[in-house]
Image (tube, rainbow, N blue to C red):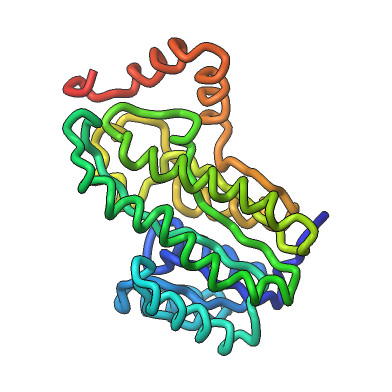
Amino acid sequence: MTFDLKGKAVVLTGGSRGIGRSTALALAREGARLAVMARSEGGLAKTVRAVAREGGQAAPMACDITDDASVHNAVDRAAQVLGGIDVFLNVAGITLQKPLLEAEPEDFMPVMNTNLLGAVRCTRCAIPYLRDRRGVVVNVASIIVSNPFPHMGVYACSKWALAAYSHTLRQELHGTGVRVLTVYPSIVRTDMLEEEPVLARAPSQSPDACARAIVKAIKRGKQEAGTAWLPKISGALFKLYPPWGDRINRLFLPRGYK
């Protein structure tokens, strides 16, 4: 199954920076019609201008995905502006670097509320529109699901939960015509990486490379996709023999984290 993005109505969260902005640009090059959601109106304006330079158009939708009313309003407005929704991408996310034994329950709340529940809120609002178009939900998880790093456990828990939500949703939507794609990006060189010094020496990819992989997976009709080959190998090692995966990860840890 292939999916032509030309002329399709596409909405994505996290569109003000990083993977979200790069994905918006990649989609614009495919001829998609865009609505981009994010909290930062200034960041959204930059994305809209960047999309215009690619010859596309993007409608900015200021939205806080941790707030139910904000999500309902933004998704409905996006559908109205675009005349429906063919693809909805849950890209927005936040991170936290902290040892698990130091992490309080309160530390988990904002990360889970954004990375998991933000996607849940958006998906619930988008599904009626996607049913009408036999569309696609794209949930951007992380390679950390299969390749965990120390001190990144809170973030990992949120992405594990998002992956579980995505897989289960795929099964529950069987027969509706709505497809669910779960993407596992590698470590990506965005401003979030500044909050994760434990990952500073690990192999990473550019946001543009990640975005191209996401768009390719959508077009090819995939249900799961990674964005780089090296993490796939190390992730397989974790499954086959976890001590090997642990040993490889320690090679990339800064001295203070070993």
